[in-house]
Image (cartoon, rainbow, N blue to C red; front, side, top):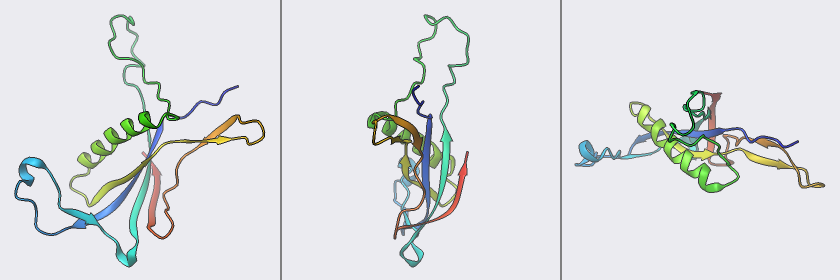
Length: 142
């Protein structure tokens, strides 16, 4: 019996503050002059679990009519996690542009391996905390 990897990404978002004068071209480039807010030399962050889904999967179409391949992520392959994470983090930042929160890190499920047999027995999602760097304010699923 194989354990299915959950199609979940974790976003660690942290609070930012203005880094000074805005860039002259910010209206066109959308570049923000921000820096991480680090009171007491610690970043204030939040952890969000984001369930990925395939919007095409539920459609009952003829496979030859459907040009989109199904979403079958294999987050054991670092590249797939990175691609999904970059897209998701950009989307999250765009949706929360009017807040001081920005994505700091993304994380994928990590396999839990039975050391005796080498079999994968489950998956663990990344934690929010990061020793001596991060204080986690919230831990929730969206």
